[in-house]
Length: 291
Image (cartoon, rainbow, N blue to C red; front, top):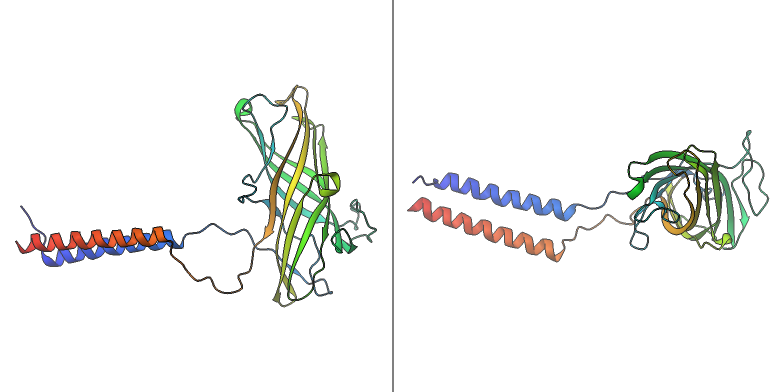
C-alpha cells in the first residue's frame, strides 16, 4: 500500500479546504442579474421627462406577478397558451411628422408631459412600439413569431422635487392593435386604470450629476387581449379575450450605500460542515502517513 507523504497530504488537504471555501463564497455572493440601467437628461426643470426617452420597459418577474409575459389563455384548446414576452420601446411624443398621441390634456407637438392628472403631479402621453416575442404551448407548440404593435400610452405621476424623487405613478390608458396579420386577423391590447383595468406603478428618479437622472420605474399592469385567428393561418377558427396582469420595468435602483455582504445561516452551516470534514480527512491522512 502506498501512503501519502506529509507534504503531499498537507497540499491535498489545503487544496480541498480552499476549493470548499471558494465554492461557498461563490454560492454566498451569487445573486440575480440586474436590469439594464436607464439614465436620461434633465429637462431643464430639475427633473426628467417621462416616459424616459431611449429606455425600454421590459417584463419583469416578481413575487406578486411571477409571469413576465402577456399570455392568451381564453379561446384556445385545453392545455394551450400563447405567451408574449414584451418590450415596450421607442416612446415618441408627436411632432416632426409623427402623429400626436391620444391624451387627456392638450400637449404641444413634441412635448410628452404636462401638469395635471389623477395623482396631482403630471400627465405623460406618448406613442410607442410593443415588440412581442410570441411562442405557443400545447396544441400550438412550435408556433413562434415576432410582432410589433403600435401603442398609445398615457401615465399619471405624483408631485416630484429634490435630488431623489420618489413618487407614485399610474398607467391610465394603453391601447394598440394589429389587423390583417398572417396569423391574427385581430390582435388588440388594452390596459389602464381609466379602462377599469387598474395599473399602478412607482418611479424613483435619482440625480447622478452632470445633468443626468437615473430612472427606476415599474407598472403592475392589468391588461386585456382580444384576438381572432386569421383565415388560413395557424390560429384559424380561434378567438377569445384574456384578462390578466404582469409587471413591466425600466432601469435599476441606485444603492444608497455599498451593500454589506451577509451570509445566510444555511451557507454558514454548510461552510462549517465542509471545513470540519476537510479537517477530519487531513488528520486521517496524517495518521496514515505516520504509520
